[in-house]
Image 1 (tube, rainbow, N blue to C red):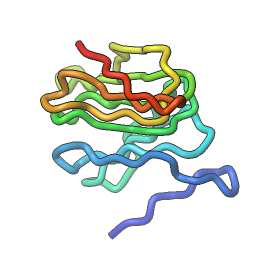
Image 2 (tube, rainbow, N blue to C red):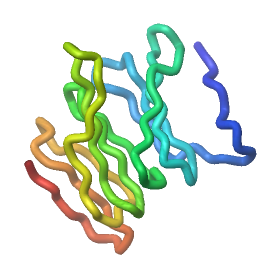
Image 3 (tube, rainbow, N blue to C red):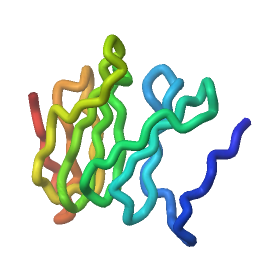
Image 4 (tube, one colour):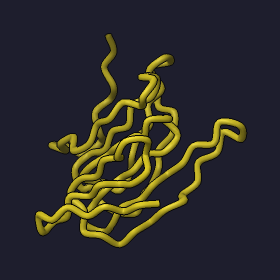
Length: 124
């Protein structure tokens, strides 16, 4: 279908990959990077690069495709895309040592796998 360019740093592994609910966007993150790339699959191009401030280890879109959660040893960060203004904001940043993150049903909470192997639920 399409090949996306590899990161500029050699031998960098992909650590996060998640499709938005409607399948039009793809979020990706590379090992050791605090950047998340948002790809527009309809145009096969880079839509946005978000610097989340933590080395990303996991990604998860909510069911609406408007909220993207990123996890890392430095915390959990949620970025929101507002369709009306076409702007990205950061409504949540939580200091949790997180290996991975997933949205619960209807995005009522975030389920976090911590670096210690525990599961933490962050609810709204």
